Image (cartoon, rainbow, N blue to C red; front, side, top):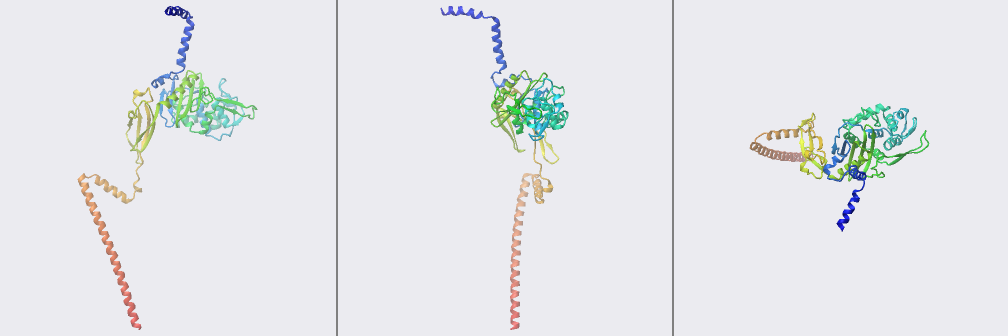
Length: 449
């Protein structure tokens, strides 16, 4: 009876229209593709949907995971990280800034805006909150003019400062990130820029603020609200533990870009995603990458006794410290007498699915030797004698050292005896003079008596 009942119900299930069946199938598939599965760490790079990305340790600059991180791409509004960092270096937060007509006109018709008007005056800090929270393009243009006098000069300054930070695949032509064929950067370069920016406490305060305001100005009497578009903030729709801040970006050419930074247990990580398919996908991938960086890596340090240096780095938990290879380049003698050598730390290429194979590439330099002019002459002579003895055969050097020791001992004894003889001679001479004086005094006394 049970079998018969089951068979009688089966056709009723199959009688559901095929359209609903396919709709349910696509719904399940889309859930798995939209939200990365929690499979083994080895496949995390494949789960990231952005064209280019990088996960960097902000303390050492070590790249933990990446894909095409040096590819020059359009950054969109994450450009404003550089804009804000440089503007904060210019002046105090309450310094007044006037928004020019050119700053407002340079914004695209559909570009992000805080509703600033030509001739409006507001404090620098409120202007930068508009740049970072509302991604206001006219505010970024006004900040550029405030720092360098013109938007073009500021863009050149941005590029020069980026080069100093090591961003070799970066060129800025504006302060807001609007589309331009000559305006580009890479995920790695943006990580370097962010690494430098978060060293400024004022930048971190602005970056991590969920909501702020523009107070009434000389041209507008209303108080304007500025809302941060970063969903990973504590008050955001996808709060992330330890988040410091982030910046989103989007244009039709750049697609979705995102920069996020977080700190846990004294470790700071920066994540950059470029050309993501959607803002939601970028936020999900950023969470996935940051979790991976905090959970799957352990701190180590390579100690170099010769150069007396310690190189800290992070190593995936599935790899052993012994698997880290250390390659030294050819030593180079510097004009000051010090020696420099390039050293590279890396893991085997087959571990690329776990972490970026290049751990560190740096130059170690020894301390320069003391100049001969600063050495005491006695130490210089001793050094020459030691070098001479070291060049001789072992038995001959030992014999000379023994003879030298005997000679030194005899010399010391001779000096001791010589000093004793001089002391005795002076004592005899003093007693003789005292006796002569007594005899002279006695004769003079006898004469007068």
